[in-house]
Length: 144
Image 1 (tube, rainbow, N blue to C red):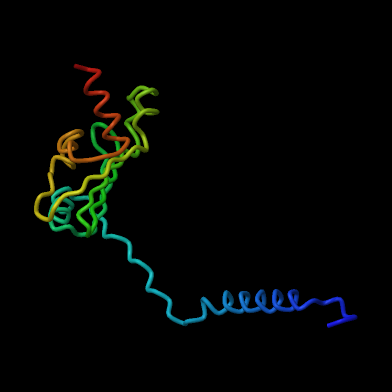
Image 2: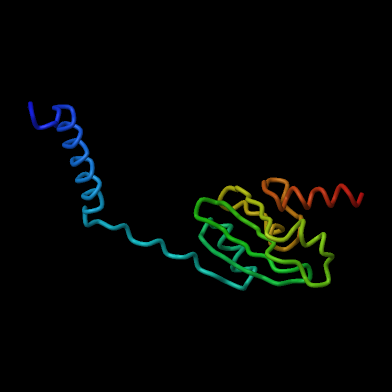
């Protein structure tokens, strides 16, 4: 193409760019949207939560007790998550800064959930990982 100032390479690049734009525009046009995930059921009954965890069912629970507020989650993949949301107001600021918002994740097999993960602060955590476990372990070592 003489005299037009457009080279063959520029025409190919423009065509490739137009093809990519068309491909991206149609990528979401399949009309099949996956169903939104349903949130896990919630309970306030520790026995119901422990039963769900034993059976590897999705379940969430938030409880406030003598230490503070914890959120517990179990999943269908036999994974348990314990989060210390906030310590009670009587706890020291340093302790709050060290523990609040930390969690630990524990994997287990169906029928072998350790209920101490729910009923105690540190029971059962030997098979868990995460910041909450690490900080609680530091406190245990420090106080001995």
